[in-house]
Length: 463
Image (cartoon, rainbow, N blue to C red; front, side):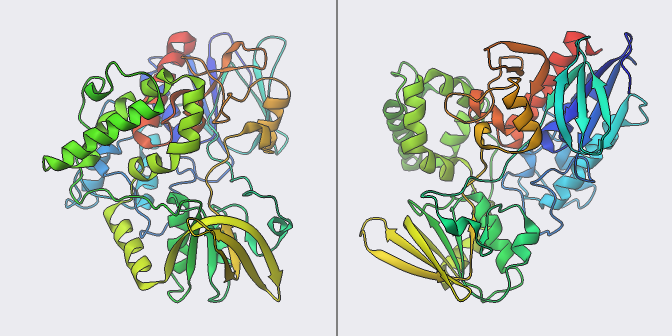
């Protein structure tokens, strides 16, 4: 591909949710032939990403359909798509992730139409470098390269870091380091118990996958506090649109003050016959502002002391998934264990996990056949060895934020380089926006970011 003076080429690296929606919004906003969009994805399917690359309808979305539109300006878009499949679907339905992946592919096709100015490329981008003429050269693993005027980095989640403390066991064949390596999960043979390190959504997904075909297999879910996600109500309601929460007005910007106000308001809502979920939902449009109000020391305090409790209330399970989990816990097939791992002993194909239980301090030995790391994505770019991230980091194109939540960007999604300067031609959208916006991992937030980034790109010369 060659650059011309007439056409502005925007290359998007990654065709999961964020990259796909950036392309969709660019194609919908562009008014002429002077914008070319190239969407690059290393997997064969553009649009599905990590979360929606499942074909098992037992895995459902954890947000009701009414809040899962890919288009920020068309709230009913996804519901209408679902009703073309089955009229019984409605805004409160928790739809399978397979259907949502189909929907994203459909939305991309619909936006692209017959446009000659849109191109899909399958391949892995290894590097992005600025040329003397200020174009960007993207080098791909197959030896090809392409030139772009601007590039959007839309890489998503990276595999978790190994848990602490370090252990030689993490080099064992009985350890699965990446919970999204479905082939590795499916290779866990036999009915021996399996330990999952982590008790969040990733762990619940792995739990369901490991027990779909082997209903006798025991699963331990291990975390420091043993907390599990709460459930959505049976008849969910969309978040109310309103101003900044009254109960946070005029508070000192400390975690303690905000947490007290949140707890008090939730308790009052329940006492009045309401639902605590509505209080959490009311925060959704304002979470980024709340996060920015906290000084760095309070942000660190939140991450160290409140995060686990926030996650289980804010990121809830679909009712059907929560019911399945509850039944497995009741039957004893699954067990949530709160404690601190002291070490591992491996012998004769079995693994013994030495665990100090929270509260009692007693050391418990769990005998399992395999261990899966479900501690959550790694957003620390200094500890990511993916070729593109390593190149951009080592050559100073991007830098880590102070809290190691993601990539430093400015208000217009431009990445900030190692000298603290925002690039005019390199942008980021995806879950690493947590570094600036905190809540940036769910569809309702990411679709808004994708739309706003597309507007920035178009207004800066892409139309």
